[in-house]
Length: 638
Image 1 (cartoon, rainbow, N blue to C red):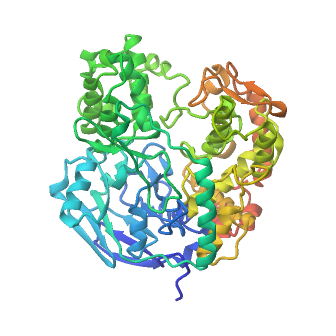
Image 2: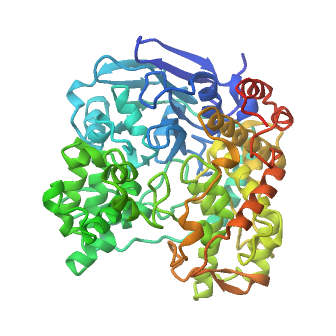
Image 3: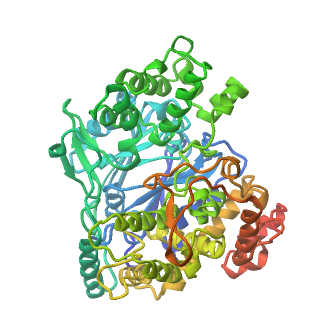
């Protein structure tokens, strides 16, 4: 069998229950599903029974790369972990950076399928073609970061490690995965790893990725580097000492992004960026009256214990409201909620949750379940800041409209899809406030919307018109991107300083795919793969209980509580008609118009409008005939 270009050629399979290790050819999957999320979704569909619990040994933990992984200069060495999530009770995923994914590919594998449960604590050691299931008893009870460093001492600093912390060992439902460069993965898949008695996976590879067209790859890489230098800016979070912050990049990055490593006064150092750098910042600053290093320490605590900062952020919001409403107090729960913002509070909260101590055992099931256990008064304190998954309701439907469909159709916070809209609009806001390189005029914004979202009116956030098509276009592009897998900070390239009209080029992803793999594929062909993967995931969710239109919904607060602000956009400023400045502050989603938007969306998707269920004709059109057969047999097609 001839190995396709850019792929390692094999998918590694490890059954922890039996100790069996084998491989299957990657080529069996990539023609239809490309890699990444597509590869994982196909294996999951074939192998994971729909009725099982997330912690059942029959659940698969899928570590997957895409064809761009290991190729420098494209920011394409992201990797995903997929499986049934204990938070969502259905198929879900997370996306990580750093270098672990590239090393897996260098070791000869495009993916890793973990099945079963070890009868004692174990870790995997993948050293090129040698794969061992080793005893991990000495690693149990250690944090994810500590575990990683201990294994690197044992195996050599060139090894790359992904581990779960104490929270994962104890099956905290929002337990995370932590890898080198402090890359983290959510969706509770750290708890799934813990349920399999798998503490860590270490990998080292010495291979390389062979591309199909080296000259085309070189030219694309050069253009992307020049474009990145014109677009990307290095932004530090609010730190005590910026001199202790250093740029940090993932393998194969286009150029430095906002990813940094910070070293605190305690000597600890690690990744400190995005939501995880600010989730405790406001409360700590309010408590101490100044900016200090407590937010950094809080982030490192979450990383080492292996808990998701998104889940902790909304949990702290809820606990604060419970304290103010006299629903809970320090003595009742053994956590100093009267001192939210302090080092003592966050340390106690994370420790008790991770060890499932006392009230922490209830919190370890997630904020929604904790509120349900306490009764209606506690539930009423969850207002407009939390989605059903327990995440902060960021870049929401009341502000961007299109994102309502993105939220309604995905099993988790669809952050890559949300960024396609929010990153552009926040950049537009920045330029209106006098940022350098201002070229995002109303005319350019409308031109970008037409090219990327299907119509100029898609960039008019005073109307629901054009938003259904925009949502479908975004999903197809992002699901293809999540199969390649390309970094969300860099892709898609929607605007550029290098062209006269400043409109980005959505054909670049397919050009990179073709140059690296040798595959004859264009922009629409790549989107077709994204549409196929999206429909396969929809079929998985249907098999796991999602009932189309009935479940394609938003939290009630979107329709009833006026918008106050959003992340990076406190004034709720968006382009309106003809690109004029428009504010959605104080607005809600209009229920009837949202339902009309769903009608239009289902028509675009080729699904049944009345039920939102998939139809055989569309699945067959996407070469998913076998999926259609199984759905029809279960009464899950319209």
